[in-house]
Amino acid sequence: MRRRCYGFSMALRHAVLAALLDGETTGYDLARVFDVAVANFWHALPQQIYAELARLEAGGLVSGRTVVQESRPNKRLFSITPAGRAELRSWTASPPRPTSLKDDVLVRVFATEAADFPALAAVVEASRGRHEAKLARYRKIEELLLGGLSEEEFLRTAPAVGPYLTLRRGIRFEEENIAWCTWAAAAIRLRAE
Amino acid sequence: MRRRCYGFSMALRHAVLAALLDGETTGYDLARVFDVAVANFWHALPQQIYAELARLEAGGLVSGRTVVQESRPNKRLFSITPAGRAELRSWTASPPRPTSLKDDVLVRVFATEAADFPALAAVVEASRGRHEAKLARYRKIEELLLGGLSEEEFLRTAPAVGPYLTLRRGIRFEEENIAWCTWAAAAIRLRAE
DNA sequence: AGGTACATGTAAGTCGTTACATGATTAC
DNA sequence: GTAATCATGTAACGACTTACATGTACCT
Image (tube, rainbow over all chains, first blue to last red; front, side):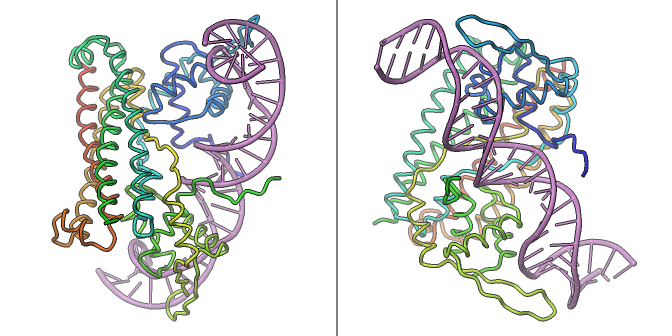
């Protein structure tokens, strides 16, 4: 039975720490932050976030205090500790693990040969719709983040550039998804003729 | 204890079935096919593939036969059954689950604020190198697939277009990764000044 | 003598998803 | 009255990773 300091890559753990750089928050609010600012490169459910916060607190990387409320459930506010910041700093310099796409729609398209062409094309087109919705949301967040500044100004002057840099990746990703869905759906429909 | 026909999305299961459309193969060879033709949208280790093949055989979606060899370990050749084809056909028309990026490097960049800037920039640049290597591999596979035909000719005449359609997504994905890494690393280095 | 290719797995553990539980308040 | 918001979790299961096991043949 080997003792594992459980975690090799542990991206979720560090995504939570990074989100706490913004200041003290509850698990509930963190889950919403994840949904808007983190979702474009790492997805996590509230349950995972609560569990991760508990583990981080046990490890001293985060400290929590309970706030008693009336007419609302009590809540716990967490903030990152100096040890948490140090951990995040050394982790950001460590080698990342290779990423792959893991897209359900692509698996379906890979199997085009065995598919009902119009049905598959419709699936791909529906997927394009979801990517368009995501892109619209990301563009709104981009506007809020930039706050009227040009990209160049923002990158020079903003206190934290990380969220903007990652958001740009999410935007390009969704733009590519939309373009690919359009093209692939057309190619699949061509087969039906 | 509810009986689950285990699998909601089950993309790996269907990726294996789709790879078997090409004809009878061993788990060993499938693992290599996954490494080249499937890796750009779904990654899986040999152990997962062996396990999946066993489950597919138990479910009648795949049938296997043992080939006794001398001076090499015996092997099992699998092929897709009519039931497997039918399953694949109906699955390709079913709603896919939303995909997200899940990129370790992006989590690190999100935490730029807490990072050592030159070290993080170096991590991002190293990541660009890996994406360039992947892109080079994908481009070679593209050449092989097209076999001298133009894209338009290939899409009109090829018996199976799925692998080409998904490969194109992988190529664009890596091109975007390279461009983003270049841009993000520069923006992070700017902070160090 | 050491490494790679062939060929198939088991065991243990971690990560992620689904379903469920609780219960008051506020907005439509 | 119905749904959403606030707020935090547990339990069970499925997906994925890491480490390990086995043994021959061929190449350098």
